[in-house]
Length: 122
Image (cartoon, rainbow, N blue to C red; front, side):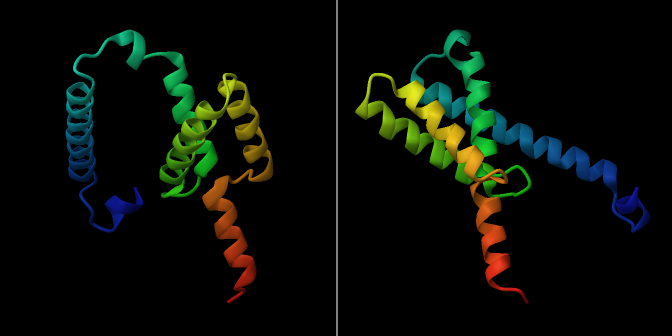
């Protein structure tokens, strides 16, 4: 209502965002199918994939724009690093993520932002 009150065409902006998001989703799906050669619902739509996405967002920070990107990079790096070192990599990854979420409740980016704001009180 505020955007409409200052003269922004909200419907057009919503449709534009929808079209752009759909284009990027289609491009991502096409690239994924191209990289895998073939896809099946068993591997791409498993419950663990949606949990992975949620963990990525929680690690990076929910209330930040760059938080999910940082969380995805950290999660992928942790998964690759831990999987090489042990057979029980899922248990170790789970404990590591649990510790990170307890230490940084606002996520990594949120904790860094708070640390910089506390350091620079201007």
